[in-house]
Image (cartoon, rainbow, N blue to C red):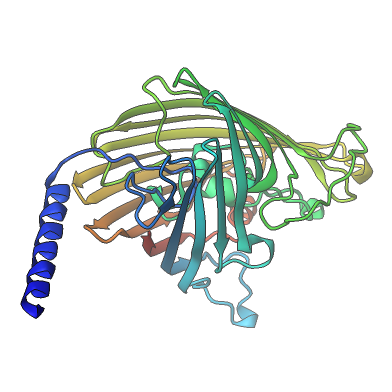
Length: 412
């Protein structure tokens, strides 16, 4: 009896090994679901609970990102009397430790919840949304998710070419020193709201949404009516895209997608209406281009922001800012990707001369059969066109001149 059991186990193991070998030897382009915005989920979906008819799906996932950082700052802004060092904000960090689950219900509802244990405050809840599909051309999403603005932010978190998004989207703007209580960024990121979106004829995409405009750190309803515009003080946002070769995967390079030919051209705009005593009404607009062609990934974006103080501030002056970047990635081997990016930002507004320009390079290694990605990047902050040395020194305050980062990420 014992021999029969051993023989049965051996046959089962041999069959499993043969099936695995057949699966890995077959070359095909997998279907990767990236709607959760964190990590791609393969068509076999790994550990998944699913009904027989496929209308109900429950898929847990995780994403862990650890980094080793080095940042060197210029002398401006440093007070040597207090022993402030040129090297700061360096060492090890865990920017993301995400646990989440996603899936479908009733064959027409998608849902996603993700918790970032490395976050703090409202940022611990990274996403929480449900998406109801009337048809592929008309869907409704409610909850906390990415606002429809900029390809850099809308790319799936674990699928970016660089470990960090362009500095022109994340760095605060500079205004005259007396006004620096208000320093919005060009990027909008995650927020709470409602959105109608869809893909028409598998080519024309649109997203129209209303959001709180308070960002990812606030999970409560805190808004009122605008004193200036007499409408709800919310973020009004829209994005339109043309994807001539079908839906563009939300990736900037994946070693499993080396035979794609997708393209995206888009425009977007939003208006963040405020009413508090120290606040601004901010208008943003952007254009974007992305192309995924076999081993190549190419993208470019430009964006603009107008900052208009509320009447209560009694400041009539407006400020205009712009930023742009271009980046390219190429798989020199199946699991090795190299990339370069050039990033611009008019941080001190168009009313003052001088811009920041930031060249950067990266190497990505996708460790086979592990879902581990290892990235190493270097970025330099340059300054050009300023009237005075003081303007030049003030423009990059808080931004490291030399930035190096090594990131190891694991997703499942």
